[in-house]
Image (cartoon, rainbow, N blue to C red):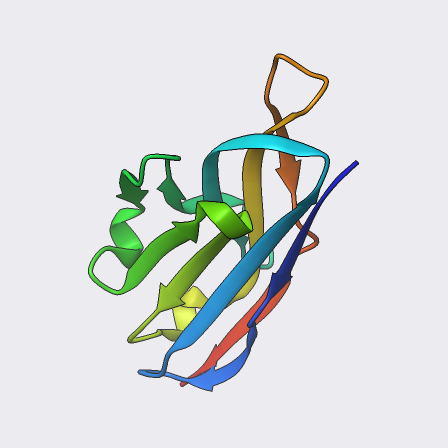
Length: 121
């Protein structure tokens, strides 16, 4: 079994910062892409940022220059540093990882439970 556990969400004023963390645990052989998604009330879940195992990154246009994704492969952990937060960043943020378990040859996608980020104006 693989678990992704997120932390770091909360309430912050516009212009503030938060750092999200997501740690993967279980019978993990390797993790390929890791990413952060978010879902606001009444909207579809959208990709926020993605990072490959080698450290290549990609961002949604709405967060470029404000958010930074990083990972620690030794700890199976991905981070999202969020700066200059805006009220429109308010959403539940989900961690996602493509994980290959020890007895499998294929990586499967796993999700965290989500963490609420609320930005007040």
